[in-house]
Amino acid sequence: MTDATPLLELRGLGVQLPGDGGPRAVLHGIDLTLGAGEALGLVGESGSGKSMTMRAITGLLPPGAQLDGTVRFEGEDIAAMAPSTLRRYRDRGVGMVFQDPRAHINPTRRIGSFLTEALTLNRGLGRRAAQARAIATLSEVGIDEPERRLRQYPHELSGGMLQRVMIASVLLAEPRLLLADEPTTALDVTIQAEVVGILDQLRRDRGLGMVFVTHDLDLALAVCHRVAVMYAGRIVEVRSAERMHEENAHPYTRGLLGSRPAIDHRAERLTAIPGRPVSAFEAGPGCAFATRCAHVQPLCRERPPELAPFRGGLVRCHRVAEIHQETSDGTSSQEATA
Amino acid sequence: MNQQAGRTPSEAPAVSADGLGKVFRVPDGRGGHTTHAAVRDVSFEVAAHGSLGIVGESGSGKTTIARMLVGLERPSSGTIAVMGRDRSRPPRRGAERNRRAHELQIVFQDPYTSLDPRQSARSAVDEVIRHHTSLDGPQRAERLAELVDQVGLTNRQADARPCDLSGGQRQRVAIARALAAGPRVLVLDEAVSALDVSIQAQILNLLADIRAATGIAYLLISHDLAVVRQLCDDVLVLRRGRVVEQGACARVLDHPTQEYTRALRAAAPVPGWRPPGVAR
Ligand SMILES: Nc1ncnc2c1ncn2[C@@H]1O[C@H](COP(=O)(O)OP(=O)(O)OP(=O)(O)O)[C@@H](O)[C@H]1O
Ligand SMILES: Nc1ncnc2c1ncn2[C@@H]1O[C@H](COP(=O)(O)OP(=O)(O)OP(=O)(O)O)[C@@H](O)[C@H]1O
Ligand SMILES: [Mg+2]
Ligand SMILES: [Mg+2]
Image (cartoon, rainbow over all chains, first blue to last red; front, side):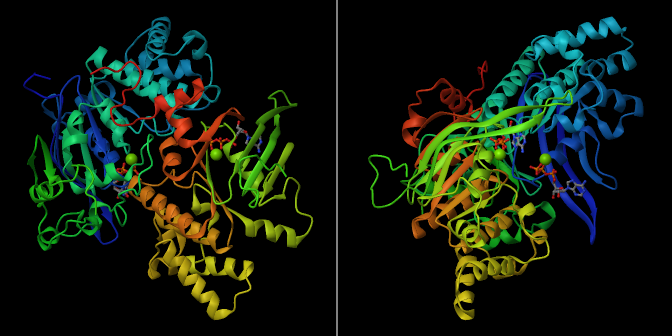
C-alpha cells in the first residue's frame, strides 16, 4: 500500500453504450485507486454502474462501448497493453467472482476438471500436480474432503459450497487483484458471513487487492477499508469504512443509511428517499441526485458538482457544507429528522 | 377453534395454524420416489390486526406455508384457519373459494410473473374490485382512485403496462391489487426482498401506513431479520420445516434462547459487524 505505484488506478473512467438516440453514458468520471492488500467497496443501487466499473477494469465491455479515461494495472494502461500482455493481465493479474456461481460453471463437468483445466492447459502442470494444487486451494477456502469434491458435479454442491469452488478456481491463477461482484447476494446470511470471512482472510494472507461490489452498505463497511458510494454512474462519496457511519455527508449516502431497517429496533419511520434510482443517461445536466434530494436548490439542477474533499472523505455535492451545518445543529448527524 | 388463552376472546386470530405439515413426493434419483417433509408440525397464530414474520434460510419451508394458506398446496397434516374459519381442505364451491380470496391475499417476490403484461395497473385493480365487491360504477371509480393513491402510484404509472414500470412500482401495483379484494390478511412472501434499498424503505413505510389505517393483518415471509423487525410484532424462526423459536420480535431478536436464532442474528451485517475471523 505504501508502494508508489498503486495496484489499480482509474482516472476519469467513463463508459458510453450505443442506444436508440445515440450513445448513452452509463459511467462518468470515475477516479479510484487501490493498493495491494487493500479492500475497496463499491456500493449502489441497481443500474448505478457497479458491474460496468468491474467490466471496464478488465477491459471486457459490451460491444460498441466507448471507453473514456484510463485504467492502470500496476502502472500500465490496459488500453495500451500488447495483446499478449492484456491476456496475461486477464488470466493471471485479475480474478473475478460473480453473484451466481451456477451461471459461470459448466454443469456437465466435474469440479476437478473445472479446477485443473487452466493449470494443465495454460500453465503446463501435469495432471497430478494440478490436482494437488486444486486440493490445497479447496482446503484454503474451507472445503472439507477436497479429494472427494473433485469427483463431484456442480449440482451436488450447495450454493455456498459452489461459490467457494469459484473462489478457489480464481485463486489457482494467483491473481493480484480480486474483483468480487455481489459474491454473496444469492447466499443465505450464515453462508454469506463465511464466504466474506474467507475472502477477507485470503486478501490478508496473499496481499490481494480487492474490489467488493454490493448493494449492502453495512456489508461493504464490514469487509472493506474504504467504500465508494455510486449513484447514476458516478461516485458520490468515498470514505474510510471506519468513519462512514459518523461522517457520511452526501444526501444519497444518508438516505441509504436511513432506508435500511435495523435488527435491534423498529424505526418510527424509515427515512425513505422518494422516487427511484436513475441510470447515468437519465440524469439531467446538474447533480444526478437532484430529482430525489430534499436539499435541492436551483444550482443543483444547473451544474454538475465535483467530487471534492469534505471531512476526511470525498463528496460530490454543491451544498454539502451547508447541509452538514443544518443537520449537525441539534440533531444527530445521521438522521435529518423532519 | 384453537383459541389461545390471553387473547381477547371477542376477536378470533386472523390466522391460526395447528400442527401444520407438508410432505412432498420427490424422485429418489434411482427411478423411484421418496418423501420430503418440507413443513413439520408448525403451529402459530397471527393475532387479529397483528403481524407475524416468518424467517428462515432458503428451503426452510416458508413459501410452502404461504402456499398452503392461499390454497395452492393442501396440508398433509394439521389445520389452518383464517378469521376463525377452517381452510385445511379445498373449497367445495365457488362461493367458498371467493370468500377465501376475499379474506386473504398474497403478494409474491416478483410481481412481474403475477401481473398480466397487457393490463394496466388501473384495469388490473378495477377487475379485482369488480369481482370482490358490489360497488356501483362511481363508487368503484372512487375506490380505485383511493387504492392507486394509497400505494403511491401516479396517474401515469397507473395507466402504464407492467413492463414500463420499475420493480418498486410493480410491487405497488401488486399490493394495490391484493388490497382491492378487501382482505383481512395479507401474506407477503419476500415481497420486498428484490427491491433496491431506497425502494424497499418506501414499501415498508407504505405497508406500515396501510396497517395503521385499515387494521389489516400481515404474515410477512422474509430471510431478512431487520425487515421483519421493522414491520412485525411477532416472529417465528423456521429451520428445515420446523419451528425453532417464536414470540415477540423484541424478545426473540434481542434475547434469543435458541442457538440457531443466535447464529442467524450474528451473521446479519449490521453497523460494526465483522464476519467470522475478520479483524481490523
Ligand atoms: N450490456 C448492456 N447493454 C446496454 N446497457 C447496459 C448493459 N449492461 C448494463 N447496462 C446499463 O448500464 C447501467 C449500469 O449497469 P450496471 O450493470 O453496471 O449496474 P449495477 O450497478 O451493477 O446494477 P445491479 O445492482 O442491478 O447489478 C444500467 O443503466 C444498465 O441498464
Ligand atoms: N412442489 C414441490 N415438490 C417437491 N419439493 C418441494 C416442492 N415445493 C417445495 N419443495 C421443497 O420443500 C422445501 C421447502 O421449500 P420452500 O420453497 O417452502 O422454502 P423457502 O423457505 O420458501 O425457501 P426460499 O427462501 O429459498 O424461498 C425445499 O426443500 C423445497 O425444495
Ligand atoms: Mg451488477
Ligand atoms: Mg420461498
